[in-house]
Figure 1 (cartoon, one colour):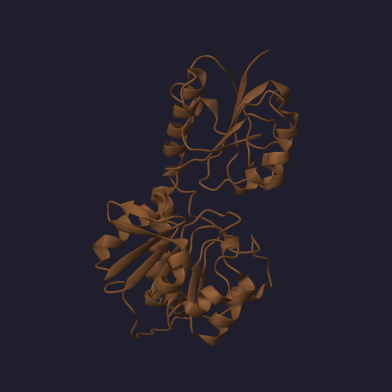
Figure 2: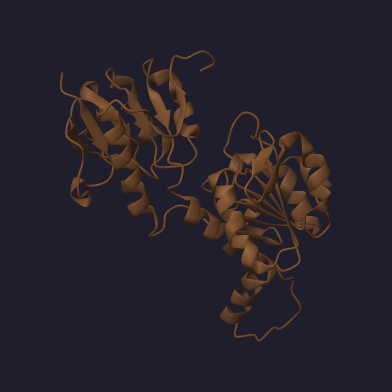
Length: 316
């Protein structure tokens, strides 16, 4: 049986693809590029609706590898019942670190320095000065200290922040200092001027930022979310914004896309970007490197990188 690899990047974009697979281009179009039953490697289309990305899965009976081009794999985990056993699900760790970290810093600086207000004033031809907080001397808490969280800290350092605290699912040491486990959040939250969320969406982190989490944040603190919208309880966040006690900068929301008329659009003290942390000019070269490396490993039967789970294994 032919082993096909479905790629969402046009084949001409690659300088070299390893021999041993039949490569087909598919970026979510209605028509499939070949028989899904012959697909052994499925590189998931980027920035397409979950229904589109999951559509061929139940016909891919010879599938062995699902490679996302995102750091988060929650949409594929939601479709595990469509995937045959023995398939490695891998994420794109490293592809979005630079872009997402850049946006986290952009949202933080723009919110603290009042850039949204400057834009509104410019549109009305009003010159409005004022006093605004600086990032310098602030205490920053990064919740989700993986590759993206570490990249965020790399970009924070030149801004002379007073302190960076790091939180991940479990505690460990890092090159920059200790990484605290999630259970220490109640102690760390009241100390942070800025809380940056870069955690994957899991059963543990869904709704992590609830009313209790927000209540522990200090008055005047800024919440920045470049993770997933569902990490934050929107209904719990809204009253904190309306009261003016907290501000927020959100690249992701729940629901998403945020519908017209949703109260989050008009909430005071919130800056919203439309989930643009990953799609930048930095995406394609990094995505191609990950795809070629993973395909080379697959055809050479070498260990794959960034395996999140294998379908049919215990606990999956």
